[in-house]
Length: 133
Image 1: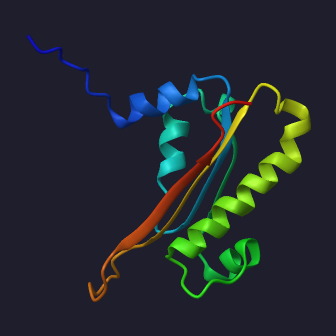
Image 2: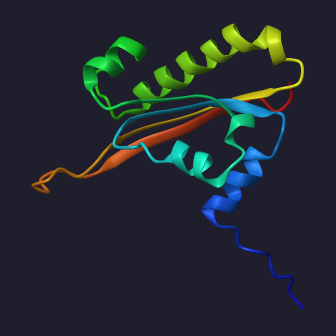
Image 3: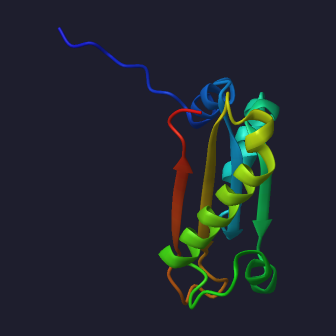
């Protein structure tokens, strides 16, 4: 007899993370990838999980925040985002709550299909996190 596992919805997964007290971090989304943080806010309990959300659709804003990269939707850009946001979390919050918090950064950079349909949609997403405070 096989054991059936409950399939969790996206909202239920987000709520589970929101209710996991030590987790605290940043969602950084540029380009067309601007939906992940919204799910965490809509499910409730996000004030205990989200230190900051940031989204930059315009390339000039993205460059000003993360520096220039040869391509906006690339592994390199994703790495710049993760490094920048993780550094800020530690600089601003480690002294205040670092002994009881596992910091994380979720980042994505996405190119959507254009109106004329002449390009391919693609993206990169990643997470940097601590396993213990």
